[in-house]
Image 1 (spheres, one colour):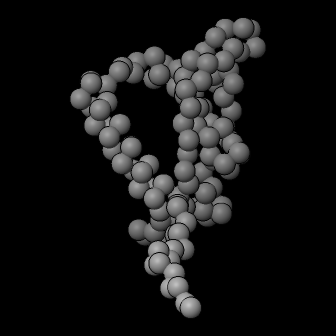
Image 2 (cartoon, rainbow, N blue to C red):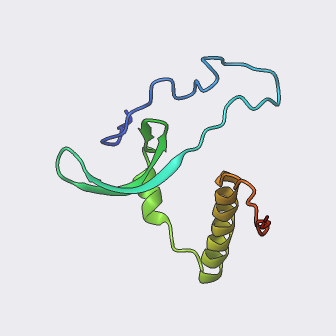
Length: 116
């Protein structure tokens, strides 16, 4: 008999990203979606506090049944690795921001001619 963690349910259609298909041509990317991860803390039905991660895909929030145990086992990365990751993230965000900026229309910087 297995127990499901409080607050965790199996999502409907969890493995059906491919429109319900169970087979496809080999080596085909069928779907790609951005999933955002959040650190969370919540209390269950009996008031016990839980800490872990949740993952948001569209309007649906997922949590792994063993997430709390995994989250309790993670450690802070070393300083050099934190800095390297921060640098890469900043570079990625800067590139993303520059791609999203609208192009500025050309500006005429020439001096107007005086007639008369």
